[in-house]
Image 1 (cartoon, helix red, strand yellow):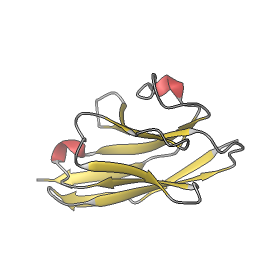
Image 2 (cartoon, one colour):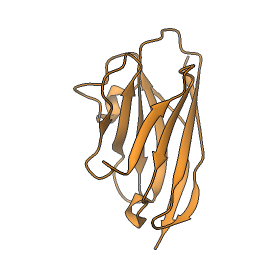
Image 3 (tube, one colour):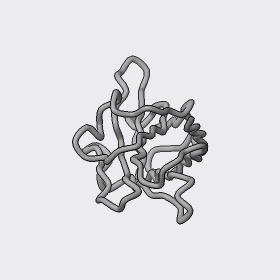
Image 4 (cartoon, helix red, strand yellow):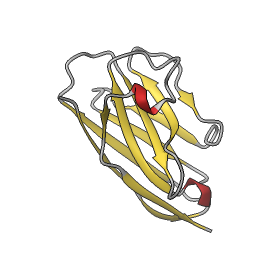
Length: 126
């Protein structure tokens, strides 16, 4: 059973930065896909970025390209999301997700991931 624990959320002014972390526990195989999703109040959950441990190019939502960077530590136990130039529209609950598969194709689909963290809140004020 894979467990995911997010941290690093908080409140920041527009233009600021935050780094989210997602610690993964209990996974069995070394090749898997991890992603960040977010959900703002009254809106559907949307994919933000995804990374495959096999080394493929990460995917990003158009709304965060050039501002957000997804990465993983060398031990491949923690996923990060570096968020720069934050905007009020980035305000949301951010979730970490995991699946034993490639990230391509259905990477932005919520149903494609088997495991989820509890979320961490990001609030950006103008």
